[in-house]
Image (cartoon, rainbow, N blue to C red; front, side, top):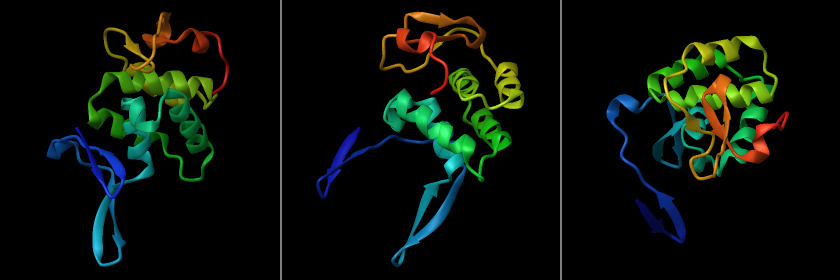
Length: 147
């Protein structure tokens, strides 16, 4: 569902209370606003690449995240487990492998792979299957190294 306020288009969705985690409160003037922390934002974008502007932008954000001082792969995994979306581990593992993050995150994702295949980005045609990640990817991502 979308709404427009003051010339800005917003996408709205209902989130069950148990799925609200990884947030912090910030003050904007005299109003307290709850926002997602960077780790939750990354997990949300991996779960739904459209939220992050498409998979290329998600991959770019993830690459910056992996180089940041605030990087916390254990927290990413804990958030992904709590979110309960198996496609997150497939996408995160694939993208982490491309970013050459090291074996710990890759193994954490591999251990949590669910049955069935997912698309790297549901909005794109994804004809090529990367079997080790149970992930269908666009042709342009099939042999590409790095993101």
